[in-house]
Amino acid sequence: MAEAEQFTWHVVLVDYARDLFSPVGFEAERLAQVGASWQVYECRSGQEVVSVAREADIVVIQSVRPLLTREVIAQLERCRCLIRAGAGYDSLDYVAATEMGIMVCNAPTYCTDEVADHAIALLLACLRHIPRLDAAMRRGEYASYLAMPTRRLAGSTLGVIGLGRIGARMVERMRGWALRVLAYDPYASPERAAALGVELVPLERLLEESDFISIHCLLNEETYHLLGREALKRVKPGVIIVNDSRGPILDEEALIEALQDGRVAAAGLDVTEKEPLPADSPLLRLDNVILTPHTAAYSPQSREDLYAQICDLCIDVIQGRIPRFLVNPEVLGHLRFAPPKGNAP
Image (cartoon, rainbow, N blue to C red):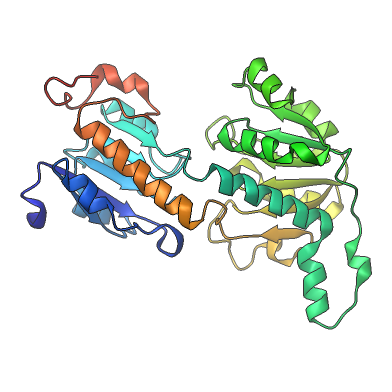
């Protein structure tokens, strides 16, 4: 890091989604104002991460590549904080970082509107079969029969799994559609649900009563394959499922079976278990599936919001404050490095 020797702190972005979420351009100037350098890389292996970030005080990763493993984190000798530039932080070893006294932060608010809007777009496209009708028209086929099956949106039941920022925003967006809304979230309070006008229910009831299901929870040990084979056996026949959260929340093999036998009428997926989706995936051959390439979060505004939040989090760490979006507060009792003198959290 010879080019950054004049700086006291070093911030390294080790990977990012080049097409959608490359840095904006203001990051280096903002961080320089608090004595920090800003370096950007596109690492493709843990070894590359170590080579560029061994002496970094703050390590940022935007993409969902699982580069920050226990082995890699252990070699980041100066690291005080890992930042996932996104809402989910399943792509880094949260447990290992906590054990090593390293703070972990995320950026959960930068794309709330975009992801909620994308879920609604997928739901409506599935319900009205927009992609396959459009494709038929372009082939010269006036195939009106492809509009079936469908149903009226008003009077239907929407089930929302996860009532956090994005799930709640989707509920707010859908208020004018005359839907009954159920929600499953073991961490949501009855007061929050009541304020949103939704009924909190067990997952089993949501599956059995929902005409549409939209997934908005984090991926962790509790939610991995939350909708697996047994869960999908309980769904209301003809349900539409939308997922723009994380692919492994849905058991893909079980979903494909349910799509093929008609229990699930259609699925709108912005995320899949493997990304990019393998070329031999059966999902690519099903015309009752709508796929987008993990782009729900994107807009020019969300990109700027994301990197502004990253700068804010870095500045909090540098100036000795507890970062706003600290996801492992239990680490504060055994931090690897003490905060700057006079600014202890």
